[in-house]
Image 1 (cartoon, rainbow, N blue to C red):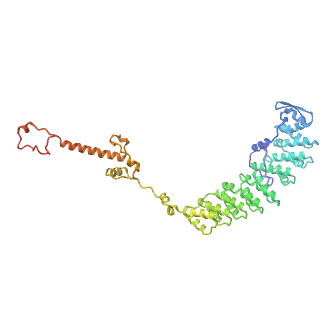
Image 2 (image 1 turned 90 degrees about the vertical axis):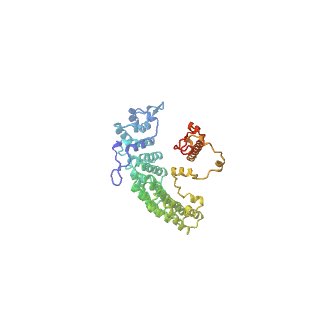
Length: 461
């Protein structure tokens, strides 16, 4: 059964604990072609595949079909459980049929039947890849691509040969198989890439380098080694492809990416160096090693590298250090565009800027306490900016009629001053008011010892 299958490393024999059987099984069955054979009754499949009956009726997509032995062999993949043992035997005998159509049908059923029982299946697959009939050979090559994600150990030796096959369709299907294998068994793919990077043919190394990005996600340290070896390849194209994986590696393993980027920065190919810069851009700005790499790149002979590194300086350095570094680079820089950028980094608006630019760096004034404001305003002093000309010409409102909660602090003080002046005015008027005389005063009966009625202090109001 598929859940009992244990994928093993073809070199060590140890189990490979990557991926899941359920996932890879689904991946294989989703590529199964559909057809009228899916409408056969299960009890008719084995007799029809053996040739014991010439035809059988099938109802599929609301139509009736009369199917032959070829369809019966193709339908063997529908048999699961106990019936899969018999299906396995019939399929093995179908591989030996003299009819090419039956061999093709058997190869189409192989990936699904092998999930149930895989004994001798891939031995026959290896044989039929070299079948004299081209249709059988193509069917075997396609079956290899479908089976690879499920049976990495079963197709190990077959895949090694097919990847280097001189026949194009066989080589293409083998590379498709390797790509599918990278999703579920990246460690196995790393073994294949390892051997392919040693091939003298540059095309094999280029195609192997293109798989590095896929295995980086789950390949672990084995994938890092492959990137390192590809960065040392004699082919510029291989190194370019490998360098393009560095930004992805920087997100996952920044320390490893820093080491590889440092090496790629001195590569003779400009595209490799640019990829190294992109990787450094993704590194932490506090990474001291990354800062050293960028600083060394600002003096590179390559204008593209120099430009990329200089543009990175504001992200990596503080303002004071940036101005000092940019001032030093200005002494040797010859490119007009970079000179302009460096001058902008050296410029200090707080010291060399216009009056408006300098004012941006001034601290705000400390606010005056509310009590001090009220006391000062009561004495006729003002705070803040002068009113606009339009405010000066505007007629003043009668603050005595405005509610207290709508008054400003200045208006409230002015209203209090006005009220005090009115009280003083009324007091003065009261002192000067007419005073009536008493009867004693009218008839002249004044007390010699009484108070002086003419005195203002003792007047009876």
